[in-house]
Image (cartoon, rainbow, N blue to C red):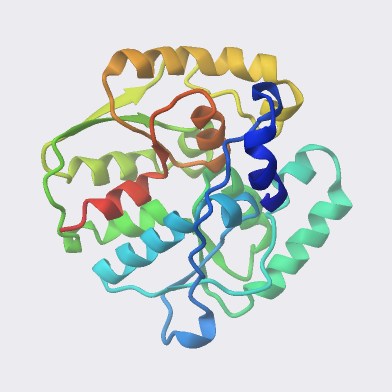
Length: 256
């Protein structure tokens, strides 16, 4: 990702399958510096390059609801893409690494709906894996949110709607922001087309699935786009000039 960031300006448009990774890096809070953690954060592989601002946001939200989230070292990729491609030995090795990294963590929070199910299988019997959206939503009454007179677009990833099922909690969270108008993108199949590695291995098909959502976004008058899966966000961000964020990153910006 560091190499990709450095060469991105020199690459032709067709050779930029992902947006340019941001330069900023916010060091995670190490577990040994915290006391009585409420949960441990799973960062994922691409998340380390693209989601420093999201990791900072989840800590701000944790502080707001009185919870401490830690980021254990040694964690790695969830292995979802490997398993889908049939590389089961590699997927099992990644799962074993994560089991060791999260040993002692009773609850692990996922920040990407596409990683959630595979991570939960890896840590089954050791840790409970929960969507960070659900955890924040349970303590939403502790959040002090400022008015946000803005129209935003919300994309609900297939994995969030059909696997994690945190879409209801997310809608409830956003509904608590005064003056905020939310437009749900549901054109076409509602699927952005990223589909794991499809946006890289079959970009034409991925782009065709994405286009109805981009058309709906352009017609909505929204100023930004929210989506709870990193693969979806990267694929959508490569098709629009609007800011594309994780919903919790946006919610942290609304804290009073």
